[in-house]
Amino acid sequence: MPPKPSATFRYTAMRLGIFAACFLVAWPAVHFGLAPAGIGKSNVFWIALLALILSAPVSFVVLRGQRDAMSEQIVHRVDRAKAKLAASRSQEDDADDAARAQGAS
Image (tube, rainbow, N blue to C red; front, top):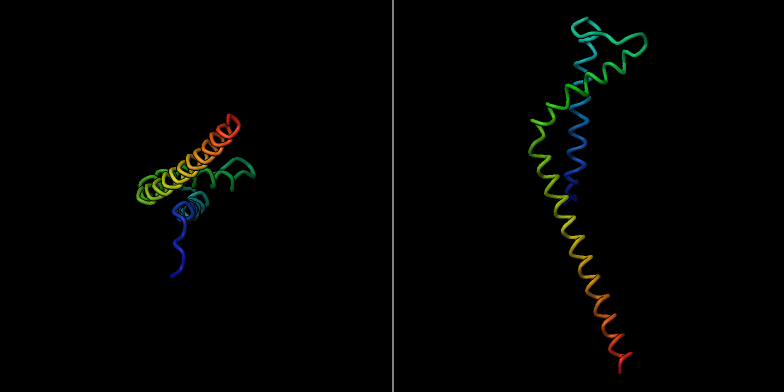
């Protein structure tokens, strides 16, 4: 069975896909005058800005489930890191206590 892709990777890929789709919608809209054009040679940057503005609310609604999955994955990783850190601190404390007990004897 192939490894499960990261929820963060999936969210990012889907977010980029939505941006690309919005870019492909904004390009003809600007070209045919349905949306205002940029100033001078800034047209591509203007289209990218329009695509970003369009893709943000779409992604917010469409990718809600994926964003929640990514959040759960991040919380799980942070909790696991905290547990490892606590275990490491516990081992250091035990070793320090043992060294102090030997030094006191």
